[in-house]
Length: 431
Image (cartoon, rainbow, N blue to C red; front, side, top):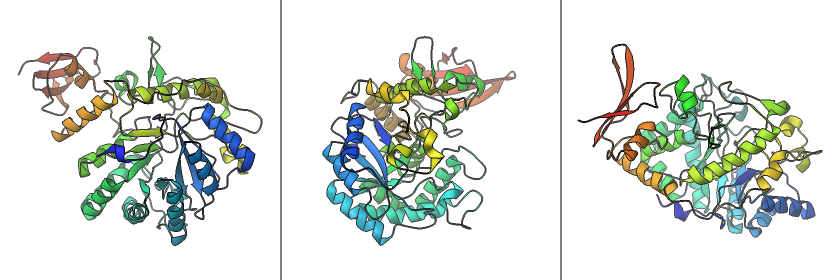
């Protein structure tokens, strides 16, 4: 997949933001002020809503003039089941003429609130969502836009709306029932929208380095050895679920943009979702948001184009519903510490340091060609590179011997193994 064919900001950075929850937007000098604030934070991507009739048009014009890339969601109340209508398609054609390329036609269809009354069933209907999305995607591509495979609310394996089984069922339906059409869409300019919500699944180690690789980090692995992103996608790496499925079923890789998510603003001023990891207050939210952007720039995959955290403003942009008041960076009476913290960041580099994204992308493609899933944080893969053990010849697998569980993986230069949970004592045997 040629990622260079997709339009990207000149700055080359991955820093984005979600605009207000409203389909109506500031105008005039107020809009100019907001765009100045975006520039002060070195934001490059802006996710915003359109009512289907072009309510985002004036904002998109100003954003594009300012060198920012809009991502437009065609908002429909309870859009499932259904497809875009002629009104929305005309709006897409108009916005494409302005220079807008990225479009979302659906949002979190694994939640019952996104379905018409009486249409929701236990577990939802991922196959129908995939079918309707394919029709919308073809229509958006025909008008010159890039269609997003809809973002799911990260819910792992929740019995009713688990995001991981939803992704599995959606992509499997496309592969089994519309393979050629789906392949054409993904080759033609489709991308994956996600809502990578970090929660508090991150921490700073004794060497002052931040870690966002949950569930592969030592804290999680010590408690739940062998846990992978296919077990829990509540993470900055949650996007790897649809990416992995797309590679396995269609052998393609497309851009990923997190159009919501990021570091949630702690409601009530302090939260700790997972007690294994430190909780944080508003200052901790600022610190972690900066660390998240920096981590993505240094460690994110080449296909990961942008992170657009929820949410820059709600009431301060005229959205009267108070439900999102506590999620906003800019409030009626204050600006959260994250605003000045992001403004203080250096503009992100236009190139990626050697040995990170490109290397991992090459490794991932090469491993996948051998039918072996690649995880850049995997302890065995890192050990094999350090010891120059060559390429993998098996996936990781478990063996029980003398009441102890061992994890094993074969490489051309040796067999790597460790007792499950004792990841600091990796060893190697000759064939």
